[in-house]
Length: 518
Image 1 (cartoon, rainbow, N blue to C red):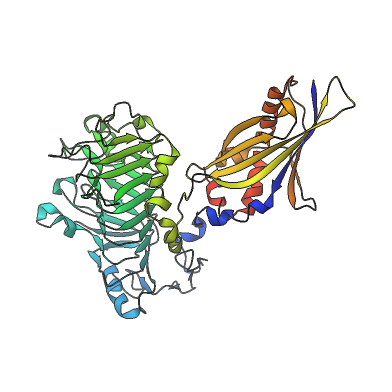
Image 2 (tube, rainbow, N blue to C red):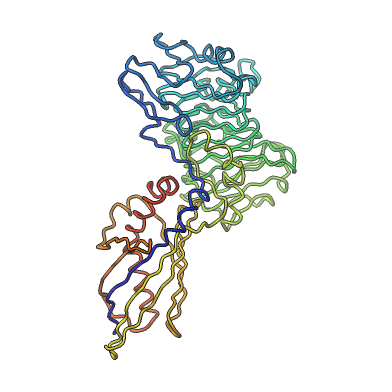
């Protein structure tokens, strides 16, 4: 019988200092970042220009620290978005960021941000509060690109808290809500509503975070290099006989680097489709051009996804040139056993394969997204060392009470931001048969973290190690070293709440966002 008198975990703080540099997670404080539609004239926002999008609202209701305000009631500088954007050309200095705040309201207009208007930022009061809408469509004689309610050609465009909408309806065919040809453009908590061809990602590097996208046929299309992260993608009810397809990516060149990555997003039905789902087939995409590239990574795919997954484009036969892939998706629609058998379709099986489609690798987002203030996950390497633990346990064998053994279990903790996972590689420093190697994993979720309770205590000895002490008795007596190691691991898991709190404090700018959400 082994008597366990004390197990202590030492944390090497020196390993923490470089983590904020190696894990690129831009912290966006949502409780401060959103300008609520119910905001009173006396509300104040604390949002710095470097990491947030607006700074304050004075007592008169006028947003300060922005360059122009749009308000339908006359309380702003202009009553339409188009006039404010046009005026920005004469009110800015060089290519510095120019911020326009659009108060709540439904703005029926067609807006163009041309190529001479770089680094424009448009902030609304939230999805369905600030709405820019129109109904131009192909059935009325417009070219597809010219149907767009909102067109962006200037680089560095940023938008947050706005709904972009085209209300033409499915019977009017192509009708674009937003067209972006803006390099280094980013959208945060925006909504894009339409039916066919809702969102045109025409070209260049683009990033969408926590956005809602509604549509029917090819409703995310174009030839941009784009990542959509933590977005909600909704199928709407199409015309009778039509099939729904999310993506129609238009890569034409094998040497190009364009494509769409849908990451940690949710694909499901809008309310209007729910009743009609029995006769509508829904697909992840179809190849608009020969080298079409689309990857779904760790998304939730609802049961409405057709088992085939992907649909041929009319007249297309280049199934060996396209690149379609799925990796670790969940939900009833994520089963890949019935997927198309095209040579260009892939089921990825490892992080090494999927890492090339991260924000850091695919968009080089680490170099430009932080300047927008929009949060994002980026993987610069698969695992980044977070911290070292040393578990010291004193053992008293039942047959030799005068001898105590001390086993040191060295635990290397690695963080995989792509998975929101902590990987712990453990190696004991005992002698002979006491040497063991184990590996275990913790996936942090807010609900689990909040509900965990232990009696672990924290102290700070002079040697700068942070000490966790945990004293317990096993429910069943370990009879060999393997059982003991399993018990040690159980003890470690019992104090993961305190581990999380420790890292939460030390790494608030890097790990707080990841570990603080379910």
